[in-house]
Image (tube, rainbow, N blue to C red; front, top):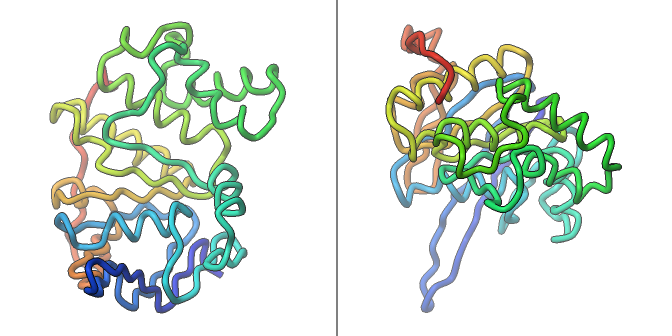
Length: 242
């Protein structure tokens, strides 16, 4: 059984009497430990797909199984619980709370899970070690560079040991050198067994992942296994993201 299984998933909106198919009969499997990209231009349906995969929205029709649980008919409350336990998110603009320290920002998902203060601190420090920022735990976000803030966001996404992490345009607010370092961090985390899905419009970003899923007009237009096709892009050697 795959970690994620979508079968014939559609998402339909009605605007001004017009039917808009943001997703149209999409079927997809994601295996545990995979490093994939979901790529497509604005309006292609890639963000809608991420929202449904990430339990931020529900499909109009079709079935979704995540880690052995059918989630397509889950209530809003049930989806929130699944998100907190099984899914991590990394966004373009970091979404860190400026008045909290780095450690407190990373602890936030565990606060919502009801984990004790002592356990939260221990696990948050472990997550910061994964991204090489344990020495910045007492800093505020504004005292960090963009690359460091994104690494804090990645630590926060990892702290609840999610089954899958969705990274939505994670390098879009970074310079190219820092962006390459963030991609290298995702690659390393994938090699450690974590399941990661990059969502991007940029073919250069998508090219670092072993499997690429191209979305166009709400459908899967193409899937590419980069190694089989001889298209895998090596990430340049970089220093940690500053």
